Amino acid sequence: MDWRPNASPEMLRARADLLGRIRRFFATRGVLEVETPLLSSCGITDPSIEPLVVERGTSLNQPRYLQTSPEYAMKRLLACYGEPVFQLARAFRDGEAGARHNPEFTLLEWYRPDFDHHALMAEVAELVCDCLDGRGVHYYSYRQLFLEVLAVDPFSAAPAELESAARDRLDAGTLVGDRDMWLDLLMSHVIEPELAGRGICFVYDYPASQAALARIAEADGVAVGQRFELYVDGLELANGYFELGDAVEQRGRFERDNQRRREVGLPERPLDERLLDALAAGLPSCSGVALGVDRLLMLTTGAADIRDVLAFDWARA
Image (tube, rainbow, N blue to C red; front, side):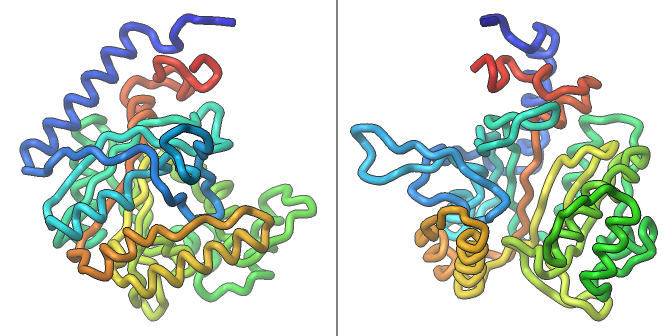
């Protein structure tokens, strides 16, 4: 059993320097640093993300969930005070470990009132360019990338056409799934590798079925989720939304998430009623983004494995 740290002293100093750079970036813009609880009474409903659960303790009268993101608590602050806020938070996701994932990781999350997702993309680009020199910034709509790389329109193609495009390029074996599954597979295994040589790439306006916590609007004749993802040299770095503020719609999305969880044999999660009450009270028009600090550190230092930028990875924790 190895007791020694993963990261070198130089890497620990690089992390400290990066955190200082991030804090200075927001200080100059008047964005307030906040802290919110790591443990919540409600877990995320998204079927693709599993939280770590704390079930025992004298202070517990019900299970508590280690946050997969500080998003819900930060939105409650926004609904009450309306100020721009950021947080450097520890976050936890079950079942994610490897060269690019650790179940415990550092997230930078921030929210900007009166920003749409395009304005927030511009600010994210400023921060990332401040940390990474010499990379160009590119913006692509989701539809644009599918047409360019696959010659397939992701909004009008039938599920069978998407499946055929995937099987032509990948060994999909006996895999079966719905439209979004095939879109996700094509995005992660065909399109993302194409972004590896393009520097800083924003992908925006996803299918409405993938809106998650983002607003839905019409663009170029189709309904899109007003959200974006950021890739740097092909590495997924950030995920942002023009935030949904409709409590009724958000409740419906949570309930549909739980229905999908039931269908695939996952446990349902309690709805975060405090978040829904905050949305009903009035969330200001805003956009928010979560950015992986450990991955940003990998990019700034040239590390190929996330374990090399952590003081202690999951196996040594």
